[in-house]
Image (cartoon, rainbow, N blue to C red; front, side, top):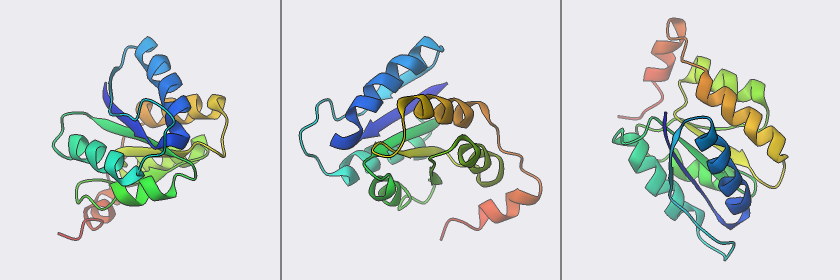
Length: 143
């Protein structure tokens, strides 16, 4: 699967580790930065990732910031993005099954890397159920 990944300074370490983990599982990763822990503005990275997902250069995106909130809000400003803030595997699964989420956001300061691997794996492996959820998902965009 083609996956774009980005973070702010709080998520750099988990981002680096997850890139390696997902590559080992056979995924193609596009690391959009940042590449060190110097302070950055999360919207810059969220917008770059959201654009790649929106134009279908990648199938899904993965984002990290300290709480997950700011970078998630930024990504969701894009019409074609359905970014889900997930801190448990069950939430990630439902985000894909019921909401057809195409971006996974995680709170780097509040979960372990073991959680990150599990949440990301579930998100990647789960497919949208469609059916009764299709109409709701089609109402998410304001266009």
